[in-house]
Amino acid sequence: TLHPEISAYPVPSADGHITISGWQRNDLMDVRVYDLQGKEVMNEISAEQFSGTIDLPKRGVYLLVMDTKEGKVVRRVMW
Image (cartoon, rainbow, N blue to C red; front, side):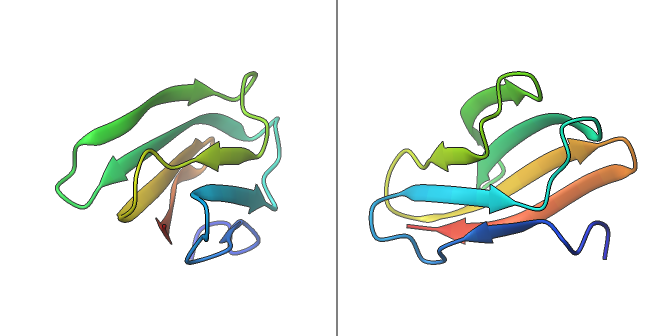
C-alpha cells in the first residue's frame, strides 16, 4: 500500500468532518473527493491550501484521493 501512514478518520463521520493525518506537505500535490460513481464532488484542493481536514458535502460514501509525488493515495470515507 502506498503511504500506509496516511489515514482519514472518523469513519463514519457523525457530522461530515474528516481529518487526514500522516501526510507531508512537501510530498502532497493535491486532494480530491469523488462519489462512488466517479463524479468529483469537491473542487481540487492544492497542497498549499490543504489544512488536513475536509467537510463532506452530504451523507454518503466517498473516495478521498490524494495525489503525491509517488502516486495516488485513496481512502474511503463516509458520513
